[in-house]
Length: 263
Image 1 (cartoon, one colour):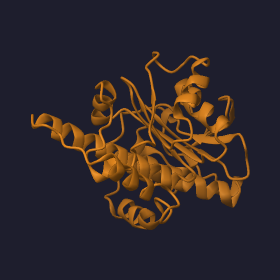
Image 2 (cartoon, rainbow, N blue to C red):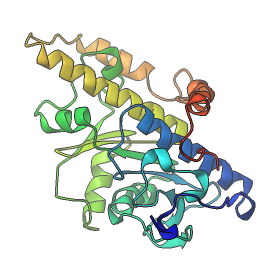
Image 3 (cartoon, helix red, strand yellow):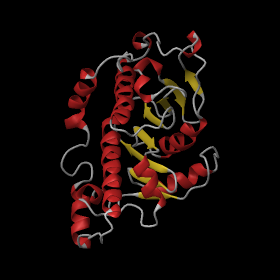
Image 4 (cartoon, rainbow, N blue to C red):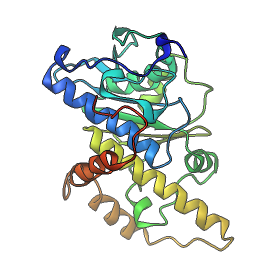
């Protein structure tokens, strides 16, 4: 392992604004949490965050690091077109698919501060069944009428796919990429993580129920609509805020072996 592929990066805290550093720390924590809850896929997939005060500057992971290796200082600053603005001194680069999908949504949705994309076993399975996500549990009812679907067009490297991705997501904060995986977004990193955690949990529960071989029961439509409304951001409290400090404590309490996410 040469120094050009080392994961020990010098801190950039003194080189960026306080707002950007806070975003970097929270985004690095989000990567670690996605891994902690079994939603990572080796070095693949992406979580991006918009840098506060900027319309088109984003943070994304180096392509080649495990999610459990990512730190605040290892993140790459890009624009929505995928041009690298600043990056650690390394031979690792970024994955084009990251800004094809993420850049399109960030560009079209100024309300979106963070986007998470996963290839989990449960997410890929539900994305491949005709019914999609069933509103069969309270967790999945959150997404009833608030979930986009995008048909598979091959690996996301075609810039022409951007417009279709944005149209299929619409105003929602969650989307199932058919035959591919899951995507969530939110005004904050915390909100996007909360939404992905719940979407993943809903997919796992559905697969468990389907494997039982019995008929799945669904509540009446009016109950689905009421439940979905009550679980939309802003109806009761912002998503992700209440549990975030507890999740950071969880990361801090885990055994060492990797540089802390906040470095």
